[in-house]
Length: 298
Ligand SMILES: NC(=O)c1ccc[n+]([C@@H]2O[C@H](COP(=O)([O-])OP(=O)(O)OC[C@H]3O[C@@H](n4cnc5c(N)ncnc54)[C@H](OP(=O)(O)O)[C@@H]3O)[C@@H](O)[C@H]2O)c1
Image 1 (cartoon, helix red, strand yellow):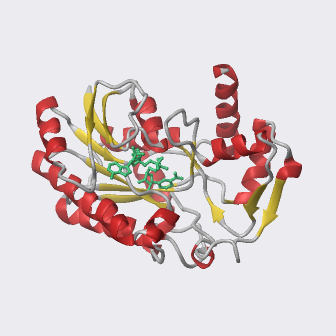
Image 2 (cartoon, rainbow, N blue to C red):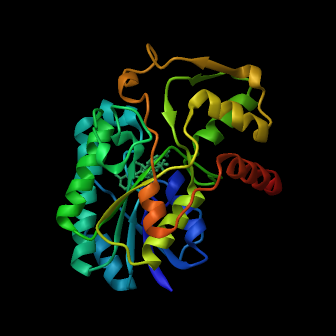
């Protein structure tokens, strides 16, 4: 069994990957402030803004065989508010981890984003990247730095992610669910198109990449449905028993300064499909399954 260290293990994606990859791998987690809850072989504390020597030593001591880097300053607003910190954590932190992966000759998967596609119409191919926001720039520059430091890096540009999220940070579905349960109305954009992907499908992509020994690649990882945020809310309402009257269709214009860059970040994931045999679970099937798992957990 392969020993994997997942960074950002208490984050939304990190937590879900730890859980979903646990059947096939021994999972080790790197955490920052919030201690992760998933079952782990071991945990190491990590600050992307500080020295990563403890992480390097931990990898050596535990014989870690692969590194999946999810940790990031992950919110566009946080990055815009403090670009210096965003660059330090997202770019320099990623570069330092890639240096470590290269030093130990272990596979390095870097989780990037669909938000590097800030212009033109989707579904975007991997060559379309045109980052225009601080968050997007930091993720794109981090990809470049990762390849320089560790040429065998595999970059996964993930679409808007949804999943069960029992981790410390919830997904947008959980946030929407909580707000709606409290009787709040939700303003959902009609003019932002994404191709939402289930966190479990990202875990499957990672498993295929490891088991097939893929190296030096950039892959889009998106679901098969391109959909705007309002339509997505209306669809999710079916499965999570949301009051549709509380879903308010709105334009991004005037609400977010990033509106010009977020019109269509949908992904064409044919490269990943063709090269690894990966396929995305149909959106409705995935939402239905998550809703069923929530109900079963109650
Ligand atoms: N969510 C999406 O829809 C989406 C879509 C595409 C790509 N992505 C990418 O997926 C990855 C995970 O996103 P997410 O939604 O799971 O974000 P998240 O829930 O905000 O998790 C981010 C993780 O990074 C950790 N972190 C933050 N600052 C750190 C630091 N200085 N040192 C070490 N760790 C630090 C956080 O730990 P603490 O909370 O303890 O600080 C947290 O565990 C990110 O790289 C993001 O760019 C996300």
